[in-house]
Image (cartoon, rainbow, N blue to C red; front, side, top):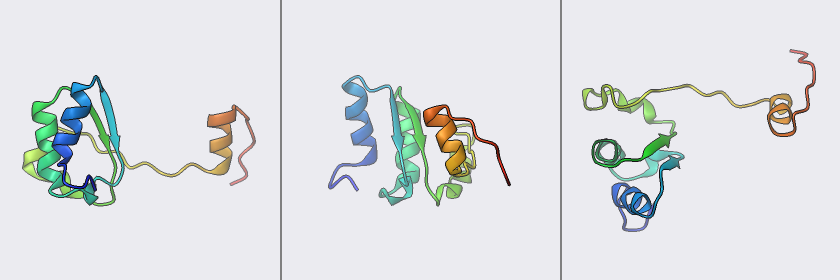
Length: 93
């Protein structure tokens, strides 16, 4: 994923350069992602958002009180138009 750089080291460097928020899609692709996320939360002052189909594995006691899980559904095309272009169309289903 990061070609020889750990997830923690990547986020740490990003934070040192002024980054305050990082979003990581499909975090389960990273090596040892559970421990990396725990370390990021415990040691770095950065807001972290991540997604992944395997994120459910984070229900271990090590992650208690460290994260909030949300199930996000995809937008319909009508919802996308409303969000991006402020076009309001009626819903038919």
